[in-house]
Each structure stands twice: as structure tokens, then as C-alpha cells.
Length: 487
Image (cartoon, rainbow, N blue to C red; front, side, top):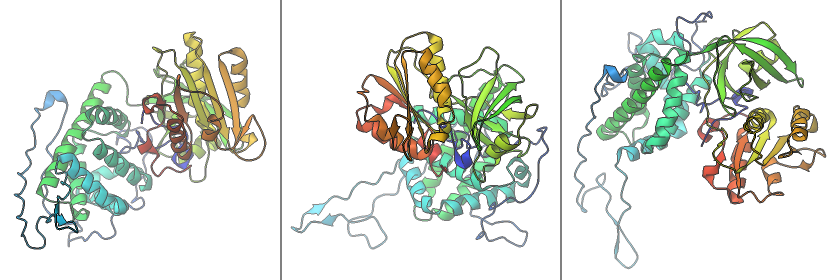
């Protein structure tokens, strides 16, 4: 799970992840006019209101206020001591009694994981089948208790609910892996700046989260579980706040960028080139969130389609899909002179220039954009490393950038480009992109890079591991950002 993808949910690159999966929309002081309204699905339908319109809930441990490292002293949350185990003869409802095998010998029951991480995972497993209800109730609690926060969110909340659950699932899964969790939350905290998130928002979110979990995780919830969630959320939010505060010292929350060219490659794919209003540092293989004036507070992620350029221009490959708010705006409405906003660069699908390993690159659809950037990056460093590109599409005419890639192949003898078409004859290969890689190789001296639709990423990782490429040398969009994303 080294980095996030190219194409995305509703045709844009989302999710995260993602890692752009933020909980908050634009800052109230943003220049673009905001729209008000209830949105869709923002309140749990089964939330029982009292006479004042509020949703009553059981008291929960309060989430302490958090701030930057200079503003607080960290304190550890002490969890209540675990209850003493019940005796073997305890009645029903007490601790389980070890089972006996057919010969009468007792079989020890598998020990239950009572660590904080184990308690978090039990809660997540319990609520996963009803994630929609839990997240809807979370937002109902948040907006009823803090109605002023509603203006920070997009008008439509469906995608926002999905992003919240994926972010929680990721954090809970890696709560005991400090390095992975810190890297993930640091990116998330930096990305939240463009939504206008402030330190004082985090306690409100945390208390609404615990209120929703306590309502629906009835089997796993209790004092120790609640203490584990309070401690985890406090640590999680602090990492994000500290990351945002550090990032604020070196970069803006977003850049304004003018569209300087708009090149339609097919009826639904455009190459959009932008001129940011200030220097925009990034690395080949990274991506950024984009917001248009037509849909305020709605951000989607797109990969940079080139390595950093001397003229400072940025290019994105965008495919418009049904119901893709940002993608359709960029493909069918944006024209030179329009101004959009770009969030900070993120992602780790970048070239390791300290090794001589070759690059095995799989790009599906508009996923060819960051692959093209990686090739340019290798060329710029002047080292003759083998780069093998497999460029996949459903049909021949969907290989919209094949001429560019073939011209690069003519200029660089170390580069090989193979088109792969799913349907019908065409190119060098036919069939699914990951499977085509197996016809070549061996790849044991290569680092792999994958970019494209979620299904291709999943199949690609399985295929590459199956032919012997270790997982630490496979770079791609984070799998958690692909959960629930549409191809």
C-alpha cells in the first residue's frame, strides 16, 4: 500500500485513500460561494429525537481538546482494569468454558485479543456490515450538536460517508503499526487543510464518532472498548493536527490554477494543463486533489501526467464518467482562462533513484498518466535503466496516449511500450493487462508500478506477487482508497 491511484470513484481519482478522504468541506472563508441545504443521507433515519429535535445518547468519555505540539501536554488515557475471568462453572453469559474433545480431554479456548488494537478491530468487524447506518448516525449527531459545521461539508454527503468509514477502517487496521499509521494520518492531516479543518473541530467529530459506535456496536462495546477508542482517536487526531500545523509553515492549503490548454483526446478523455499561481513542488508519480468552481467543496484526486516542468505547468488526464461531478466539469465545461483549485501533492508512487532496478509499469486507461511521468523522470536522471511499460485499455481507440508513448520509446532505447487491449484484436497483446505481463520477464530485478482502475490494481498485485515480485517492490494506489471505488 505504497501510494494512491489515477482514475477513481466517479471517474475521478478518489478515495482516498482517499488519502484525500476528508471529513470536512471548504473553509467558511473560502472565496467560492457555498451552497446550503440538507444534502442527501446526512441524518440517520432511525435516530430518535427528543422534543427539542435533538438525538439523545448515552454519556461518553469526552474527547479532550487538542492543539499543536506547543499548545498541549500529552496525557495517556488509562483504561479500566479488565474484569477477572469467570470460573469454569460460571452460568450462561459468563466467560466461556473450554470445550471437551470426544475423549473427554479439555481443549483450551483460543485466547481473546483484549489489547486496545484488538478491541478496535472487534468494533470495526461488528459495524462493517451496517457501515451506512453507523456513518449516517455519526453525521446526524455531528450536525445536530454542531450545526455550524454543516457549512463545511459538500451538499451531497454520500461519498463523504464512504470516505469516513474507509479512513476509520484504515486507522483501526494499522493502529499498532506506528510507521504506517503515522504516514497515512500525516497525509490525511495535510490534505484536511484545504477543507478548512481547524484543531477545535476534532473533539466534536470524535464525540459524534463514539456516540455512533456505542449505539451500533452493542456486542463489543463496553468501558474498555470506549476507552480504547477515545485513546486511539485522541492520538489519531493529534497526528493530523501536528501534520497540518507543520505543513502550514511551508506551503499554502491550496493553489489557484488557470487552465491554459484543454485537449480532447476522445469524446470523454481530456488532457487539462494548468498554470498555478505560485511555485508548485511535486514528484513524478504523485497526485493532487482538484476542485472546480462548478461544484464547490467537492474534490477529486488526479495524477500528474508529467514530471516537474521548467515552465511550471501541470497536466492531468481526466476521463468523464456518468455522475462524475468533477470529471465532467473538467472534461466538458472547463476552458482556457477558467480557474480551479489544487490541493497539495501527495503519494509515494515515485522512482527510487538510489537503485539500478528496472521499472515494470502497468497503466490502465488514464492510469497511463503517472506512468508517463515516471518515464520522464527516469530520462531526466540520465541513467539507462530498463523501463517496461504495459499500456492497457478496453479497445484500441481507448489507447488515447499511445502515440506519445511510442514517440518516447523511439527516443529512449531503454524503454519498451506494449499496448494491451481487452476486447478484440489490436496492439501487441490481447486480454487483461496483468495477465499479459506473465508472457514476458523474468521480472526479479524490477520494481513494479501500477496505476489504473481498482480491479486492475487488485489483479495486478496478485499477479505480480504470484510471479515472484516481493510486495515491498510493488508500488500502487493504497488499497484502502480503492474500497468501494467505481471503475
